[in-house]
Amino acid sequence: MPDSILGNNPGGVKPAGGKLGVLTVGLGAVSTTFIAGVESVRRGHSRPIGSLTQMATIRLGKRTEGRAPLIRDFVPLAELDDLVFGAWDPIPDDALTAAKKAGVLDERDLAPVADFLAAIRPMPAAFENKYVVRIQGTNVKTGRTKRELAEQIRQDIRDFVARHGLARVVVVWCASTEIFMRPGPQHSTIEEFEKAMERNDDAIAPSMLYAWAAIMEGVPFCNGAPNLCVDTLALIDLAQRKGVPISGKDFKTGQTWLKTVVAPALKARMLGLAGWYSTNILGNRDGEVLDDPASFKTKEESKLSVLHTILQPEVYPDLYKDFSHVVRINYYPPRGDNKEGWDNIDIFGWMNYPMQIKINFLCRDSILAAPLVLDLALLSDFAQRAGMKGIQEWLSFYYKSPMAAPGLQPEHDLFIQQTKLKNTLRHLMGEEQITHLGLEYYT
Ligand SMILES: NC(=O)c1ccc[n+]([C@@H]2O[C@H](COP(=O)([O-])OP(=O)(O)OC[C@H]3O[C@@H](n4cnc5c(N)ncnc54)[C@H](O)[C@@H]3O)[C@@H](O)[C@H]2O)c1
Image (cartoon, rainbow, N blue to C red; front, side, top):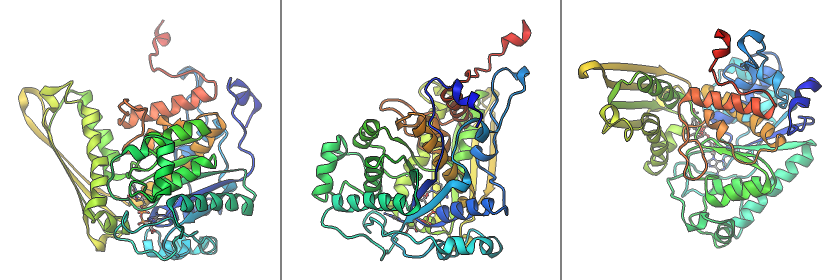
């Protein structure tokens, strides 16, 4: 990292020296694909395809200046070689066994990193079956109260740091989607939240214990699933007070990622929408968990909000009032992690003439999600070193239901999110914002 870049930054970003621990909650399809991929890149067998932090460039200054370094050369991020992995999971399988069961990566890709994966064994999880009905776990923490479980998670984080001599840690929730819950009085202040943990209140889900523990340890927390977790007033306030970046929720991969590309394109051209029907078949464990109606409800809420926020039917009633939006996920075991999504989009144009768009996306869920975990871990760690705390809305690029300040509509349009992310990096590094006005080229 050249001195001049850090020198430009008025706030000063602490350097990325030492090792960065990445703890994933859950050691399933997404986390094992993420870990295996990073190790494969480190050993020179793959390239980090899909990762903005590793592959994308960022334009600096005017177009005529020709400055477009790689993001990782511009921003002081932790190096892949400095990442150390750990996880919690109620299923005791090591990362190699878990990766084989997940069936995402072929044997030929797992074999070269098998020794590395086999050495990663999950720590006992804070887990309760009633929040994720379809999973039976044996590698589970015990304690009298939820508070005790959360304290055990804090101790796990400290032990992990000591064991590996880490400089910093981030936690990413890559565990199963918990049942649908609404925020209640238990989540309104940290005092209420802690009392609720102590009396084992049902409103405190296991995911919230990890979020609380991470924040208490000064560790950034990212939520890759749609369930209520770190997105409560109590934990947002705690993160703010402890100087910890938090973000969520629900990794934006597959169908919703494309929705947040196509819907802005319709709106940009002022084309109307009569209906959008999305269906998926999915056969991995995530699909099985989502086959439970309470977990699916959590996912559905996350997927449905996107179109309304982008299209703004209240502003454009002629185009978007009352469009139908249906989202289905069907568990279909033969497909494994290879999800197939179909979108049928009924649109209308000039003089109300109807048209249709069909999208058939044969994707691989965890292949799309793994680089997002990497980017979120690296950028959250960077954010903390840059003095950022609380909700990191600039990371909304990675999420289906981005967290935003209370009362603020999050941005869903992928390209607005991308601009926001890059402008935040420019801002933190003391570079000019890029507005795309560009009049200076014509004067
Ligand atoms: N793959 C994607 O594209 C994508 C996109 C958005 C969100 N997600 C979400 O990411 C999460 C992970 O997906 P996956 O395909 O890896 O699922 P998975 O079922 O393969 O893995 C989840 C793991 O979490 C573990 N787990 C459940 N509760 C836990 C707890 N309380 N503590 C620790 N571990 C716990 C499970 O035992 C399981 O091993 C899911 O919630 C999924 O909805 C995935």
